[in-house]
Amino acid sequence: MSPPLSCCPRAGPCRARMMAIAMAMACCALLTTAIDQQCNTAHETSVDAFGAPNEYQRMFLETEQTKGEDLSLFNISSSSIHGRGVMLTRAVTKDTPIGILYYEVQEDRNDYFYPSLGEYWHARGYITDGGTLANERMAVRDAFDRCNQIKKCQGITFRDPEKQFADPHGEIPDIIVDVEFKDKVAFGMDDQNSWQSFLKHRENLSAVYFPLGCSSAHLPNPPPASLDPRLMVPCWPRYINHSCQPNAVIVKVPMPEEFVIPGLPWKKVTGAYHVVAVMDIDEGGEISLNYESFPSYMMRKVDGVDECGEL
Image (cartoon, one colour):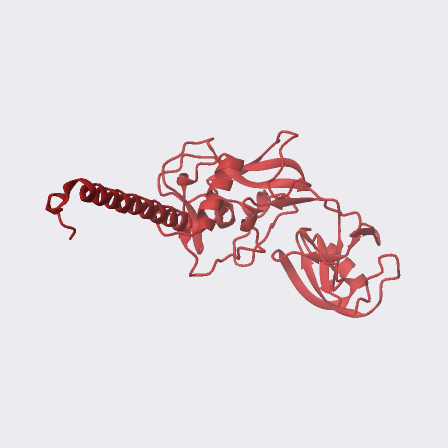
């Protein structure tokens, strides 16, 4: 401990020196505290009050700013329908818009679609996962007839590792391939030509989930068991379960012409599909939708879920 200033035998100069030292020490302490606070602040911005990482905060902010949603309305937890589901943290009344399921965008795919036989388009790519009606091994020309016989079949997709079907203007080879028959035309482009598809109608619309990290390419469904449920909240549209007696529907709403999706300014947005309650839903209630009511470019059939029949 420093001696009191009154102990200095030469009060004048000594007191001045001691005061200068004390002031310097105080300034140093203040500076050290400020530096520590800056360091702590920089560290704390990477973790919120719950210990969640920056990604959690960034996706929340992006979602609330772009979609105008109050994410405190949603909770992702175990579902009595299937896996995890979207629960409401407070009640909503009938006809209440709950949030935006996805944005509908128009794609420029002229380099990937070519007229083919009859009503079919040759697509250089694959029809996305889900909606598989049947798997059969046959020639592609025979698969056209088979697709016409299968109820709800919208197209076929198959692997072409040898690129024998790569020329969209050439004759269709009579080789045998493993064909997947699909009830949708949601299309994934394949620049390597290792997959080929034939679609009953050319579809130039697709869905974009926002934030962009919510797409199936980044966030699998079901998610890893280790994933923090709070990180799923901005991606709540990915976790709405299917029901033949849903308590909500999707409604397409036009977007302002100047609206662009952050990170995808080149995509032309044709509208936003809102989730709207069709009945009063209590606090803790799970939101459900009928997948079969979705547009054709979206998933219309998922293995393991009920089919509701004609709408």
